[in-house]
Image (cartoon, rainbow, N blue to C red; front, side, top):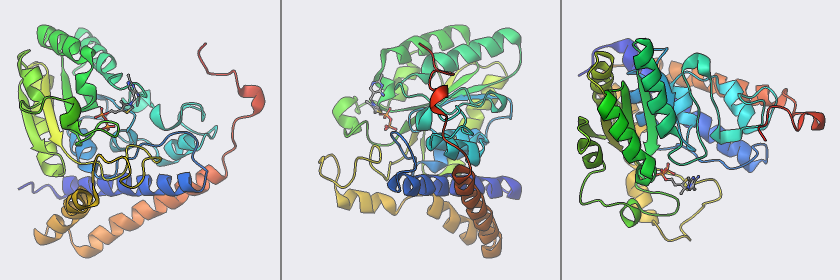
Length: 323
Ligand SMILES: Cc1ncc(C[n+]2csc(CCOP(=O)(O)OP(=O)(O)O)c2C)c(N)n1
């Protein structure tokens, strides 16, 4: 059992912060304050948290269309991220990127990405750069089970294996693609990691709703990469509790049912870790309440920050866009 109280504290704080950020964003979306699509990370918090806690501050991550959890876990500012979702000039991309494009190079966040599989090349390139510069930096590439079916996945596994790059491919298998069950689109008689193993990468599979299990598996891979041992693959098995995006409500699309959702809700990672902390006397109820109050204050501040931040002027419509 991990005895490091500061680490356990940080695990709970980061997971709770992601959960409450997502719930707050959901609320702002319903009020019409969030602009554009919103893919929530609720239910998957342990993956981003466990993985990012295995990294150093100057290490890199690449993220996905479901990226708020990854960037928050790597230290992104909740105010600037919420402002970005709401199209405000104070957001990470001056309000022009929206939910799927937050980046902060000063924190090693090389970007969320609206292109499924778009992080593969960026992460592998960043790892090649780190190796060439002998910087000691490691890159985590987050991607979904659906993204694993993009052809570029095979290309980067080959290159990372060939050049022994310091990169960890973390596959978040949340059971679904877009309104599609994983088994409808992906061979499941073999784990996704078998693809990485074919290129010589060490692979592991963990319970992605167990933050400690994710941390330990990713830490082993990160330490190996930093020591010159090359790339690894980790599959974190989790479950997306919400719809594919905010517009996917209820069960009318028929790819899952209420019984399954209820059963999986029982295993959600934030409440599960909270209970574990108390059972194992790792944190006390007042200590946990203190962390929760800190998160609530941050979320209240994020809403206030959005409210006092302007939308871009019409005259700025052609600024900072590539054409
Ligand atoms: C190249 C590309 N193809 C298709 C889409 C549409 N799309 C958005 S999310 C998604 C499903 C991705 O599934 P997965 O990688 O498992 O991530 P999850 O949504 O489950 O987190 C698809 C097909 C896209 N954004 N980009």
